[in-house]
Length: 319
Ligand code: 5GP
Ligand code: MN
Image (cartoon, rainbow, N blue to C red; front, side, top):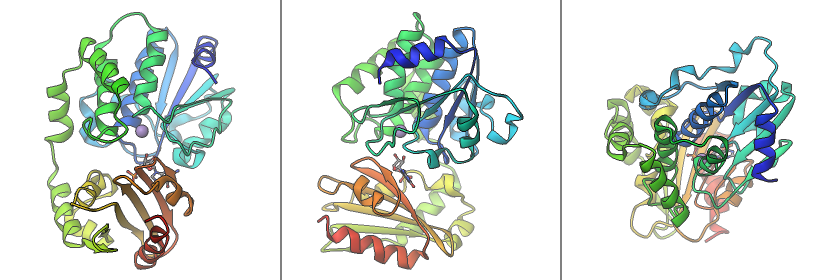
C-alpha cells in the first residue's frame, strides 16, 4: 500500500475522522493533531477521536481541545476514517464504532505487529514514530510550513524516541526533526512542556514503583509492580505510569524490564522493554498483546502475582 492511496482517499473525501489509541501518548496525540491541521488546511471537515482523556501535559498543542470522545459522534457517517498509531483494532477501544461505520478506512502505523485491519494500510516498522510517517504524508498534502504541525510532530517523535535515544532513532528521524525545526518547532519550549513538568502524583508513584523493584535471572530481568493501593496513595491514575519503566530498564546489565500494573484484582497490564536481545513484541504476542522489538505490552486476565510468574516463565525462553 502506497502513500498515493491515502492521498487519493483524503482528496476524495469531504468529511474525515482520525482515531487513535487508548491511553494516548505523545505519538498518538501529536500525529493525530498534525494530520488534523493538514486536512483542515485542505478545506475539509475533520474530527479527531480518542476513547480516553488527553493528559494535561499536551495542553500546549494547538487543537488539543478539539479531540472528542467517540460517544459524542451521534450519527455522523464519515467518508474516511484514519487510525493512527493503532497496531490492531483493540487498541482504538470504543473508537471502533466510528471505524466500522465509515465508508473507507485507513491505518497508518509503525508497529511491526500491525494486523493490517483497514482497506488502506501504511505500516512502516522502521519509522521511529507514527509522526515520522505522517510528516511524509503531510508534505504531499500541503505546500507550506506550518508551525502547529511542526510542534505536534516534534512532540510525537521526541516522545516515541525517548528524546532521540532509543534504538528506533535513525538518520531519517533526525532529518525529519531538522525540517520540523525549520517549520518553527521550538525544541526547548516543547521539551520543557513534556519533560520538565512532573506532577507530584507521578513523582510519588515513582517512589512506590522503585521500592517495589525486584531483579531476577542474575540481575538481567527487573520487575516493577504497581498495585491499586500504590496508585491510590499517590493519587495517581494510569496516565501517571508513563516513563516509570525506564528506571528499571536503564539499570546496568538489565536486558528485560517488566512493569506490572494492577488494573483490578483479576487484571494486570504489563509493559515490556528490552535492551538488545529479547524481541518483546513476540513475547507480548504470546499473551495477546503486541508492540515493537524493544517496547511492547499486553494485558493478562490474572492477578499481578500470577502475571509476574507467567511473564518470568516466558522470558526465560528468550534469554
Ligand atoms: P506501553 O508499555 O508503553 O504501554 O506500550 C509499549 C508499546 O507496546 C506501545 O508501542 C504500544 O503500542 C504497545 N502495546 C502496549 N500494550 C499493548 C497491547 O495490549 N496490545 C498491543 N497490540 N500493543 C500494546
Ligand atoms: Mn507510536
